[in-house]
Amino acid sequence: MSGLDRVASPCVRNCCLDDEDVCLGCFRSLSEICGWSVADDGERLSCLARAEQRKAAKKSPKAQVGAGEPTGGNSP
Image (cartoon, rainbow, N blue to C red; front, side):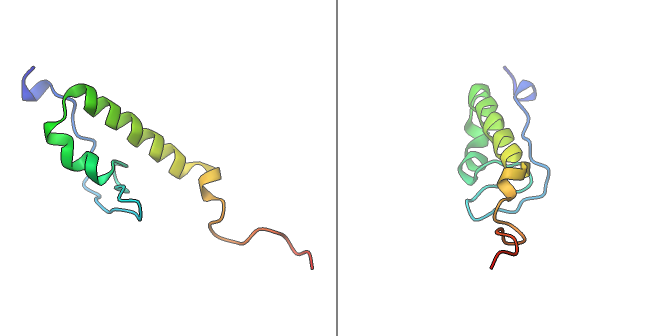
């Protein structure tokens, strides 16, 4: 398989790592980004699946618990 047929990088040129070293643009981990160029297509597809899971978890309402206003209501 030539380089033109390889699984393309999901990079969106919005590179910024969070506290867990995950890119907020493509949701790959730093180690996944660094290893992308030498990864075979199977590894790249696995990486993309993990990135998609991270993205979904980040955007889910459950991931937002604890962010913003405190919970507990107005009870004394």
